[in-house]
Image 1: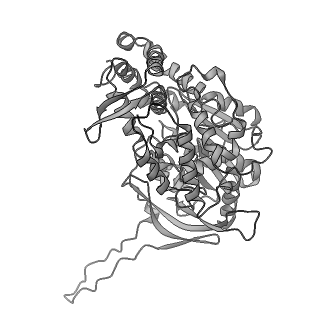
Image 2: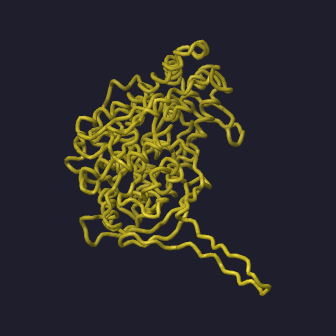
Image 3: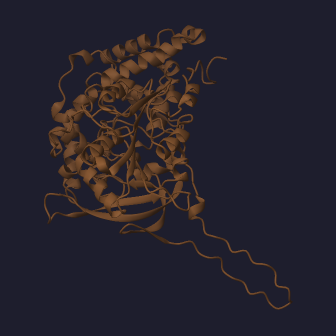
Amino acid sequence: MAMKGRTVLRLVIATVAASVLGYQTWHRSDKPATAVTSPSPVAAPLETKEPPQPARTWHRGSLTFKACELGRPGSGATAQAWCTTFDVPENRDDPHSRRIGLRLAIARSDAQVPAADMAVLLSGGPGEAATESWVLEAAAFADVRKHHDVVLLDQRGTGGSNPLSCKNAEKNAEQDADENALTLDLNKLRKAVAACLEEVRQKSDPRYYTTTIAAQDLEDVRKALGSPPFDLVGVSYGTRMAQQYLKRYPDSVRSVVLDSVVPNQVVFGEDFAANLDNALKKDFASCLAVAACKQHFGDSMQTLYQLRDALRANPHTVSFRDPETYETVVRPLTEYSLASVVRMFAYQPETAALLPLSINAAAHGDVGPLLGQAKLLSGDLSGDMNSGMSMSVICSEDADLLQPRPQDQNTILGSHLMDAIKAQCDVWPHGTRPADFHAPLKSDKPILMLSGEFDPVTPPEYGAQILPGLTNGRQLIFKGQGHSLLPRGCMPQLLGKFIDKPDPKQLDASCLDKLGDTPAFIDFNGASP
């Protein structure tokens, strides 16, 4: 699968979109009231009255919000909210610094009088915007909103918050890309990043788009809202944001939920390869445990390694039908593109269930199932993530700590992502990182951690690393699940219960026991009976 310029700039993105479908939501607290009139008892002409119009503005603290619709790139789904722009200095150490506007939205509670504390969605990536991911996440917060307002702040550099976008550079890189290239050209990647940087610098300084500076933005927003306590709900990279905010503003936080948690001490990218291999082995072990799956595919991990070795020795172009246009497309298939595609499949159990079938087909010369499905999975990824902000975070907070890992050379992913990160950060500016940035979290706040058993990027071992520093923490492990867990099973109800009463050790989470493996597909009709 070709790694065009736009895609190459996003190699370091750690997460994918949440697995729930976006849909339009309307909440009764935001609906206009309808006047009811009785018929007149006389024959005189009726006097009609216009129904009262819904309020178009809403005040909270010192801020004034206007009714708005939140959407997501590439989707027609919307969700109703209240929006405003919140101005902050780009460089917080310079009083004369450029001012940037942050997009802030509130998804209001259904309650007439909401609880004093407010829930805060901290999105993943790095590079996702909270207001754009809300249509995917709203269903998971349905019970939360029975009593709580939800704060949606696009982190600086994403969405509507002075995004570090370089559309012209990405377009040029895509046009210049060699779709038949059989290797990842790191020098070409550096040139693409330099072109992106030149465009971004016209309206921003990328050094000031780091996690800790964004945490200061969030604290200023909290104060402007009237200083309510915050219930932080972080997803993937958002768990890093939650931990950094909690470390610096502990008195501002009431409770924390960390979905697909990343410990502070982890260096972004250092164990991507090991985590992917471990997750794949667990996924494929589930197939081997089912007689029909084992009979059809044997050891899928072994088949995957054999396919990788064959492509390492002989990368070549392949053709397959585009699943959207049905046109025949020609793409290079290399060990690098294979690793990227397999990693994409591994994030969610529904797509991981297709891997044994798809890998087996590719090993026998039919790459359509593997590359076709990958195209569908990645079709709108460029609209979900901001690669400039992602580079600002990773290059400032992690890149200089990455060390060679010879033990990863024989893994499916190898050093590909780490090499790409280092190449990007050779060019992208580095901001500052506090001395205690990677120190383990220590807190007595109520903290609930969610980990997927088969997560290929933030495995359950990550949560286990954090637990020793928490006096009031608990980790929930979701059987058979992957990355991003808020919408899974009964978790939306548990999320509402926890934020209503943040007592992690007393929370009855037994309903999650119903979750389990997604059976591997034997053919394209589904799993074995």
